[in-house]
Image (spheres, rainbow, N blue to C red):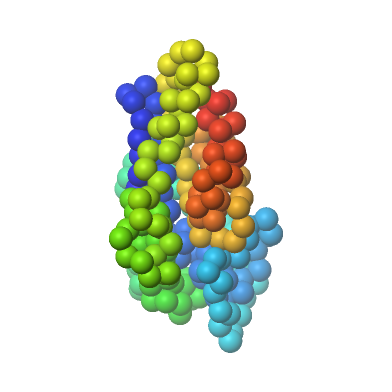
Length: 213
């Protein structure tokens, strides 16, 4: 998790493991979701031979909606409630009422967790940089640095005043395309590919931040 800001404002960013695992499970099992706006994973996930059931798809949608509503820590939520959304083999607490989805998760969990770990490593390297020259390490050498801090500072100069107190949470997911979805005034969902495109990211996130100043 990465967060920055003065005492008067805070911008936080994370790529939650449970969401990444869930997206892998959706794609590997070919679950049919009503969230047709949500792209496929990137890198692409090879489909398993057996598809998930219609029931598993419906249960995945319910899980996704619930998880998105708790993917950032609102003032009335505790870290314990967030922890309940993590998927643990043979004790999938958040899926006890979703047996069809629970079966799919159990079948693919090890591969999903490894895929999520690889994406998390890439995300960390994007944020802080890496000296590893191998192509797998796409984060570059220097990392992004305090890009959001610089953005707010520039907007403050344009306004001629300090930003009023605000919070913004940015949830990053490894799916295809350069996309941003504003879930509410204080929470955006965006793709890893958009985050890596500095110019496009700044263009898309600037009006979100401006509205909070």
